[in-house]
Image (cartoon, rainbow, N blue to C red; front, side, top):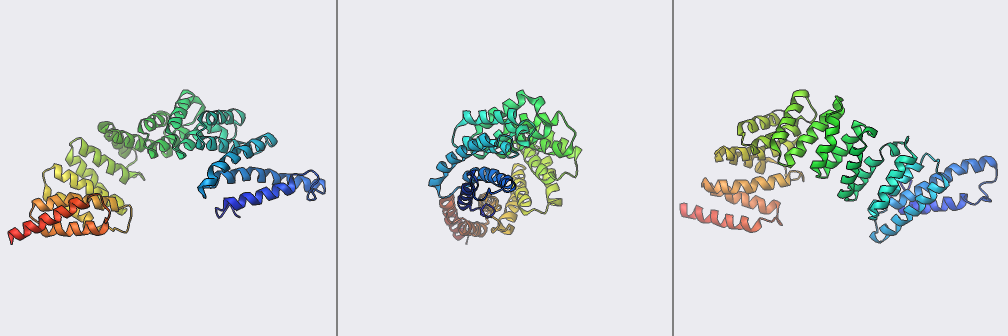
Length: 368
């Protein structure tokens, strides 16, 4: 119950108490063969979960490292005492994750390799290198994750497309785009399973876009749209596709891609991001009036209470101010500056905003 509510310190104390009652061979609780057998199962689980609790404590900070070291000690004891337990592969996987967290990289790699060889038929053993990648990412050890991927690629016959799909997604999520392309290549080249292929095409296209390989990104997104025109990734793909077309100077195709987002999307974040990109496209098409209208749609209509929209709103306000100034719409400039100060009282552009407001007031006075 303590674990369920995230109280791992008290959970650890409770498991230690239970172990203290059940471990002694002459314990009063082991007063018959039947009782001893039932208690053995409780004892085994308690030994595993006390190690697990030590991996989960995050506060107070001064307890974290000592408890991680305790977790290693408890898991080693568990594996010695219960090597055939169903929980043994989980204990070994947890050990590897803790070793990564403690910067014991070589030991972690050995642990995950041992996991694969000792428990090859367990879910943890089958996905040991994937677990190494995942655990490395969770503790910010990108180099270990990269090396684990290379190990997977060198033993690719031991892994399934879904393993590489999972690694590809982890790589994209953590900004390791060249590695994502490598992982997803093992999916795209080996399966027609839509559940795997659809996100692999998207992830590879997204990775190429982030690496500024815009032509490759366009080709992959076009393939995705052709294969799966009703894809659940439709809006995200169209959005990145529009951006890629903009980067290659194909402004009309960029506008067409973004118009599909406006047509069907209901997510306000997607719609407002599309308006931001549309404004940039319109600027590159030498249409500052239309561009300013796109930026202002976001600045005036997007909900600032939605934290995901705030960076988009900020960028649109900053983009619209010089355009309004050039068009002589000085009151719009002042209103935008007021809006910026209200929404971003600690924004990096405050000095610029105040200067632009003063200039707009001066220009308006000269006109008047």
